[in-house]
Image 1 (tube, one colour):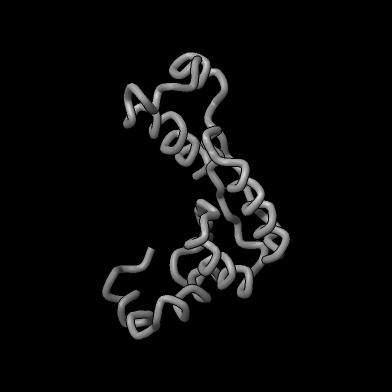
Image 2 (cartoon, rainbow, N blue to C red):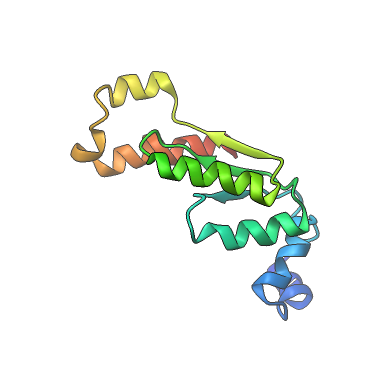
Length: 126
């Protein structure tokens, strides 16, 4: 990893959109992956990334609590943008059965639910 000052000199003048190309090309920090909720706000970044390299890995967390419309939008964006390396990550079934057998953990302990359904799967993905 390059020192912050070196990165600032090389890339500090670039806009976010212009910086995306060297990041995806591995010129900043080596291999990268994007994490996306595939919500409406994510579409812009995904569109820019796909225009640079449709093979860039994209991690999508399926918490098991998403609306059917979210799944449909996800599938539509993957096809429409030509993304070829989308990695869907889900909570561990044994952990779900143990910690949230009735699917209501979010009502009792929001932090534990987020750890189980978001933080832990994302950590495993990285």
